[in-house]
Amino acid sequence: MARRKGRNIQLTVNSAAIAVMNTHTIAFAYNPVDVTGYTDSGFVTYLTTAGSKQMTFDASGFVNGDALKNYMVDTGTFHFADCVVEWLADDDSGDVIYGMTVDLVMSNYTENGSKDGAMEFSASFASSGSWVKNVIP
Image 1 (spheres, rainbow, N blue to C red):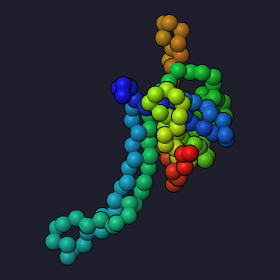
Image 2 (image 1 turned 30 degrees about the vertical axis):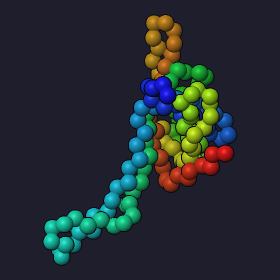
Image 3 (image 1 turned 135 degrees about the horizontal axis):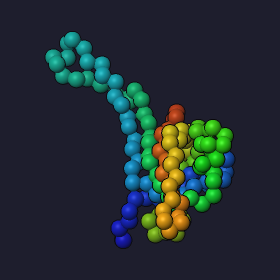
């Protein structure tokens, strides 16, 4: 298998794919709750379930339309309810290999152009609430 720079992911909002982006960083954080007591002899004890859970990712790509920018600038909306985030196969077939439904918050959006005329963007996203793994046929 050929090596790739990052992973392509597709973001779908209201049944419309609004961006295909490349990401190098996807993080899942499960923060434990410390319940260490005086009788634990100095050993740290955690609850068996996480106190908070969050998924974050940074993504970038080439601007193709204004969907992401419009959400951030024109509407002032940075919260996407019931988003579908799909990880795409490495072979550029467009096949989905993993997917999840999640409410997302877009914390930043940046566009920059190069001398050759290509407009690129970068954006950061974080989950808001729980997520559900989607069944991939």
